[in-house]
Length: 436
Ligand code: ADP
Ligand code: ZN
Image (cartoon, rainbow, N blue to C red; front, side, top):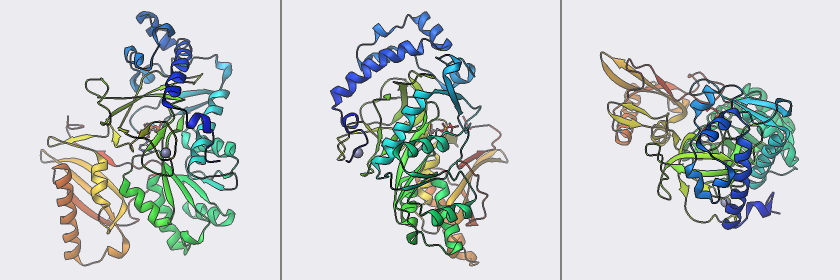
């Protein structure tokens, strides 16, 4: 068996659309039980009868992160509180946290999506699955935990941090599959090296990385450093958490599960759909969530639909890796820059380790972009001339990519503090704020 749920994963497109329409009618009814939608939909006279084909979604108003914050904590709750069994809260990377509630069925559907994803990349009930990420309010911990249990794997709920202990667990239990954030993998690998453990001598055979933006260059490094494939996992607390979209064995995009989410990609300025295949903001509607239905939620994540059918036989749409968030972009000296553009350039240098931070500062009235970047220990010589040469090459290549010349500061690998959670890529201390 290649599929976790063959019928649903390979449903013909017309079947997917039909399912979406019927689920959408129920989702509208469900949403109307939440105070926020109740008021809004009454004002606009929105009822399930108004939804008869997928494109009808365009007549519905958007829901934004700001709406979630304004109506915190219970304004989006659509069931009686006695039916809610858990809440999760986003990590608050970009401001105040938001809360999402789950009924038992919500949790079960979520676990099923994770099981579907893990199965898709070859994890089986015979695997030892170590979940290296924060448990608690962050969805990556419990989300993968219950999904991997549903699949039947032997789970090691390792949590985040304590790298030496992680490695000991990998060795002791013969961990064969791990899930973690991409920025942590290189820490894991360098700690393995210093403990004299070769990743190739462990039982590791498959890795899932996600929860934060990363480039193809980063993925390749991660894969080469352990010698196994790393599959990209995308999700956000507002939809459930991880499990929303996931790469299959072909790694040519992430299948987004259209039986659970209705997908739109819009131009964030005009709010109109982008032409097929073009990059825009991902907008998602939950199709079967009970406690916290969200309709036309603006994720602020930028991606595009990958055209064509996937060789794996799954019919659910493929999304390109997330390029970043609309609010990740910063403007410096009139140029729009995404951190992932900088990462792509940095990681093309073999001397560069995987950690870097972009500082934006104002010096004597002029905004500057300063990039602190870790250099691998074996390249970090005391030969000043060669370091200076490297610094110049990095600065030049970054300038060619983003049109602003940065100041590049090289530091030795391991000298930048690890954040413990998602990597912070940009620190903006400019007098003018975000440069807009
Ligand atoms: P927060 O918004 O506070 O970080 P979440 O933990 O819900 O809260 O994070 C969800 C966000 O993380 C997504 O909206 C997206 O920006 C980012 N993200 C998650 N997975 C990926 C991924 N595989 N690639 C890029 N970005 C990702
Ligand atoms: Zn596929």
